[in-house]
Amino acid sequence: MTNLSRRLLACALTASLAFAAGAPAWAGEAAPNRMAAQGVDASPARAKNIILFLADAGGVSTLNAASLMAYGEPLKLHIQQWPHLGLSETSPVDQFVSDSANGMSSIMTGVKTRNGVISQTPDAVRGRQDGAPAKTLLEYAEERGLRTGVISSQSIADATPAATYAHSNDRAKWGEIFPQAFTPRFGDGVDVLFGAGRQKIGEQLAAKGSSFEALSQTHDRPIYARLDEAPASNTRPVVVGDQMDVRAATLRALDLLQAAPEGYLLVVEWDAHTDDARKGLQNIADFDRLIAEVEGRVDLSDTLLLFTADHSFGLQVDGGRRGEPVLEGYDAWKAAGSDEDIVRLENVLVNRTHTAEEVPALAIGAGADGVRGYFPNTRLFHVMMEAWGWGAADHPTR
Image 1 (cartoon, rainbow, N blue to C red):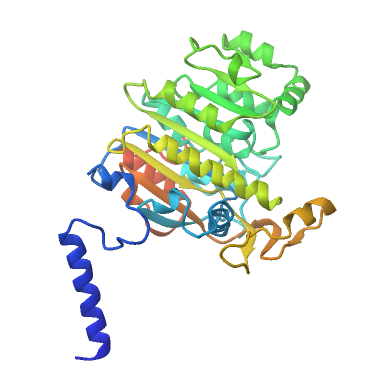
Image 2 (cartoon, one colour; image 1 turned 45 degrees about the vertical axis):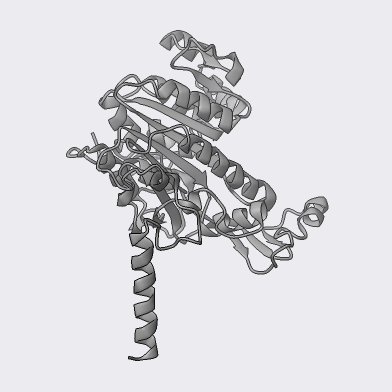
């Protein structure tokens, strides 16, 4: 027997013994996921509920750097322990590098489009010509009577959250995008809507001859300026603030949506751009802790949790040692107030722009086994539809 044969036989025996003992073959590395610990089937066929976590600009290198910054070691994020992993390709139809509009629209509709376009087909010309509306996952959920929620650390009318509930040929048209939340094409529209951007949305509404007050009165639905202003008795709250506490917003939304007898869809965005490396990486670490908290509150036998990004970003770790801060040199850079496109820290290089490489897609729970391999980001729409057991015969438009 050759040395190679002996090594292969030893590996096979080790895996077999681990399996026979009830331990995973990777025992001794990352801790088994909570799903396995509960004895839940890792890939049940149907989901009742879906929660999509979207880290804006949260590419593979950003997750790695966030783990290094927060824990001093790789592979320490909670989501990095999830059992189902794929790499999602994010390009629009005509370029290699995506913005958030195309990136999130592709995930929500299963249709790649053009940068700057919100959930319309690629015959749209940004700012000049509409494409057909591409039916979103949230619209499918509303049509079937599920409860829905959208949370964002950013403006609730910006590209990522807007792609869930609106259709526009230009992501900048916040004054046209936001009111679409109150005039849904299917169902009664987003049930829980929490995000930032109040000043700019208000300015654009005013330019259109409208306002938050006018929308509230027309649709008999208050639009609060702070999360704590929305009374507990309001089961379909809308909050548009100057900023948004994503953790508090998500947990409140979850409390409201989990009562839905038919199930729910919850979409949560947290910005992860690393123009400012510490801020962006801290956002990832905080988002990861929130995701772990949410996982502890749901039943994975009927709930799919999916994490991904709309596009990647130009950050790389190219140095460093264990026991030393990965962001060595950050404080000096911050104090200098540099606005250059290239940021050179001791161990980290940041090219402050979107990039074209694939982004991670990580999943656990009902239907999570659909996340595997390399795929276009449009595949994630189908993963979620298939997790619910739904077809899309009238896809992509209606």
